[in-house]
Image (cartoon, rainbow, N blue to C red; front, top):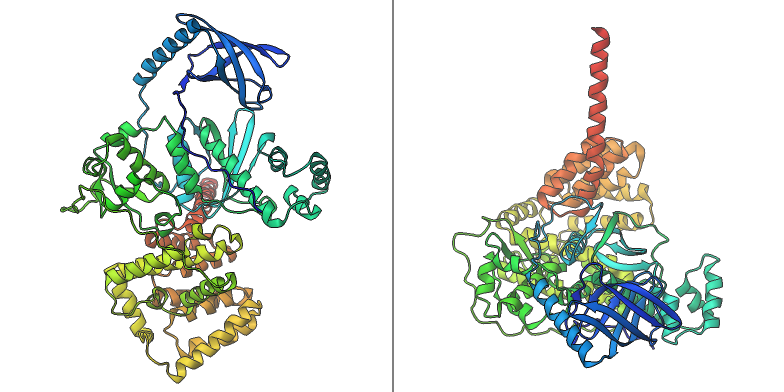
Length: 636
């Protein structure tokens, strides 16, 4: 049986915590030790001390510290500790005088800290297109903005966070959190299983010996027969959740982002966990968010995201968040949305902030709203009906359905992919797209990590199809292209030539899967000969030709023809750019990647290639200019 996943709930503390004044010390003794430690936070119920080596949980201690009105003495018990960080003590006994002094001290801290104003953020989760590198995180908002950028831009890489003496690393694949590591022993998989009694000390030591040979701990435990692979996967997920939650609770740190993943970093039993869910829980706990600034920002306009991966995340929204989502219909001023929501100001503001962190609601530049903005309902809409996830007879049938749609995306039309006719109304196209997006969202299939790539590819294809058909001008251009290619025959029978082309295409794909490029080139040449005006045939032939060095010039010709026939296909531009890079012509690849961003400004791969190529190109131009200058100088 898999171990239960620990769920982090919003704070339900009986008394509020306060940041202690700088230099506040508490003297304590217990567990055979005596020391004076700096206070981090303090409340009527306990105190958290900075200690390198915390006492064991359950240890009784005596303490004393100075409050403005006098000395506070009592007894406490150690409730939790973290090596290199500190320990939390819960007060268990205190005389009436000490209790009164502590109460007055807490009142004073509350009064002082209420006056402190959270600084206004420089931006509200806007995507500036700049690559991540390194920086300092000084509060929860900066941390949430960083993770929002990784999640929304679907970045791949490693985020390293340095928290004092502890280092934690989060690993992302296309924005999905897939693994985490920590230098804190308390976060290790073995320690977690030991504490829970799922592993004995002797079993832990035996597994550790296998780790020294290069094997991963989870794999070693499964190999020993202590737990099944499924049970280990559950523990890995629990570990990932614990590490990520601890990162979100301690936002003051330095970060470094590396935009690549080493192949041996992520274990074979790693399981993705929805980052959106963990972010939402962290927003509920944070008490240093710029919510007052959000509520009063008259320049902020928002709308629902058009990105299905963000819009249909599997998270449990609060009543306030669902209410705001239901009220959004187009671009609207954030301040007006909050005012007309019918919710208390504080509740509505935190709900809007949560939705912005998740990326379900996005900021739009000032001036974007139309002259006549849609009216915002003054009463919360009813809770949307929760559609049950379709149950598949087997996982293999589900994967077959995904692959069928991916094949349709490559061979068919956008209309066929979305399951609509060529005369479908925009509302029908939107409804079909949303239905498919809910059904195949990666968050709904987190237990199928081996299919994560397929689902992300499918969502990308569905989004491209929807953006093309939902835009009147793009749809007209696409329909014209289909008509010229003779492909606008939705639901009609195929001609003999079409059947021949399909047969050649099937054979070509079989050759491609076997990496038989000579064979695929032969069959794709026949496809192009029969139907020269079909862009996908030209693009597939170009890809096959590009794999053979002596055919790369011809490949460039067919890529140009494919782009001429289908100027909206970003995949063709990207593959053409990759070809030019193979041919060591990066200056020709750069305009192609820029064209991709004209079509899709959030295309991650194009952004990555440009961030790498453009600086090199500038350096090369500078060197060339310097060479010419020196040449003329010598002649003079």
